[in-house]
Image 1 (cartoon, rainbow, N blue to C red):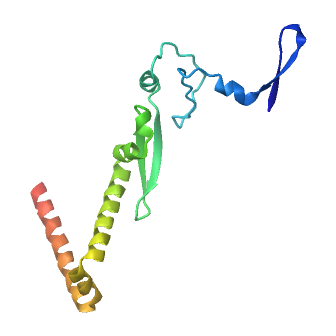
Image 2 (image 1 turned 180 degrees about the horizontal axis):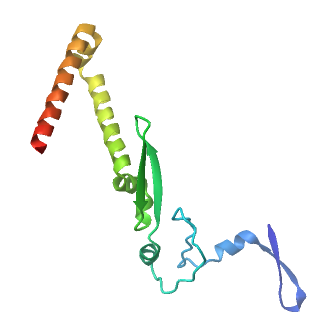
Image 3 (image 1 turned 60 degrees about the horizontal axis):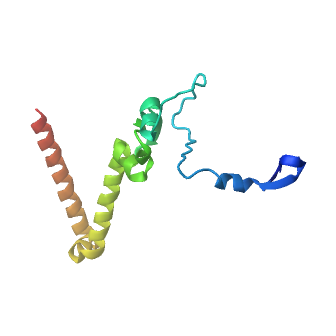
Length: 155
């Protein structure tokens, strides 16, 4: 896209639109992003915000998230952003109880997969239907005992 600038004396000078982007000083920051679900009721001019932290403190951007768990239930969560670093994947997982739980489950699944691929004795147990059933029974009993111990400790 080309723009035209008419300088002194009426001489036409063709200006490439891409050049204007390159002319933005390097010490300027332009932040254009929708940071909340709700649009403002009316535009407002805000003065005196010197840093990005000031902008986040003033506007307190939040977003409501809806997740679906393994059983198909909706899990609602409100995420608040306090700085630009909060938009990274790790920080989002850290600030979200639901996503951090999923991450823990993923890590556990990876550990189990590694065990299955490297533990020959466990693989033999799982290949034999009788031994696999016995292992499942032991695990089920252990889970029940753990749950009972947890419920007794809450009392």
